[in-house]
Image (cartoon, rainbow, N blue to C red; front, side, top):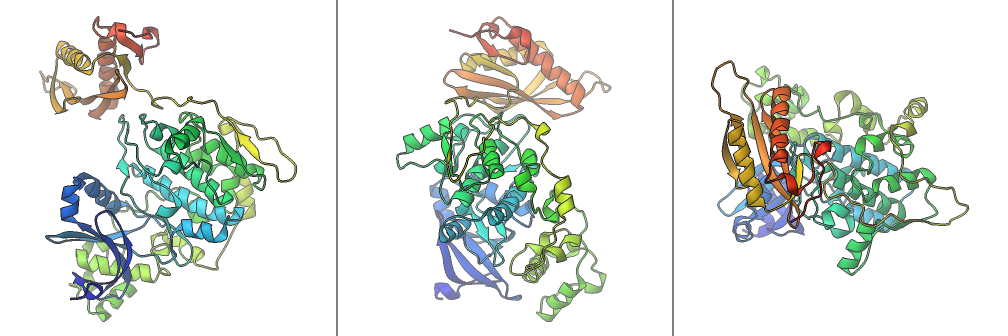
Length: 510
């Protein structure tokens, strides 16, 4: 059968939309509903050769539970002996990158509209404990009504309390200083930086940090020096400068960006609050009109008169239901994923902005102190932003004890301390263990700690403790007792660089 007529499960494949590392992305039609979808084909043999099982599994796992008007939607997976087919939402507006190239640079009004949608989608991902790590205009797609859809979660990862990420990933021009330097980071702060670069590209039609020589590019990023064109408003300049701060502990957060006057102007009602709860509603009512349409198209539904909630549909019925709902949502899932009371307000051509409400939501400068004060300049003069080089901390939120010593020696002392305190433990990895007190009575409070050693630099390690189970206060008290005992030991004490305990700060050395 010719490739453009190949049918996989309920989908008839047609033209190729793009070619990726593991295979093609093809346009397809759902046989029953006729709705167009994008099918990402992952060749299992290539996946085996490149040892990318974990990366693919993580992307699928993340996309399966993300449901937001500005995040690309995964409808279903089709598994065959040779390939995995990811059936995803198809949006016909192309990449935001091409939109910028076509227009050279966007007006502040249009750029603001895109940026509000991008920030809402990324913030939702963070609330779902997912960090994207590869935000750039090429991964921001547009539907036929120019609504943003965040795509390509291939480099994304889950965030967990007490854990740092260290993978240097994403496109160099959009990567933060801590990422290009290979330092530890939590996650949200690197997406803030990338969003700042995207905002700069939207408003200026160029990149703040660019160089054909990669070491030179990294040097520019680490120094945080860039130029703000004179055509930008003072509010836009202020926001960009707050996002592109080298030190991640002083970089603006998403909640602070929301309060900025530039972001608040003309903010649609559906984006004024969190949408993180929209996909955790236990029971979503069925739309009887869509059920009738499914029956008309020949999708057999068992006992349709008894159906009240979407969770009662079989998987294939639910896929068809979602496809029809999204088709009625003006060529993408945008309107269908809005809160019900907001759907009619955000159709193309309908705009409703309450100027008084916008004034009431204006940015309050008391919420945080900006690092830079922008002085108004006349005409089209540019402003050069210069930051002190190498001010980036090695890990933005320090938890535990920072030492300069050999990792095996540190882990041996960790196990010795646990034994002295009456714990039992098991290893997840050589450097990550789960420990709990030996239970001697049924009335004893039960909790568990996860203890991990992270490498932060050559010869430097961070000993971190995460409460993984049990009442917070008793477990936290036990974690602090454990760290204090390790810090006071004769083996570790002389090599501590910093710790949770202010009276124990000493200079390490060998």
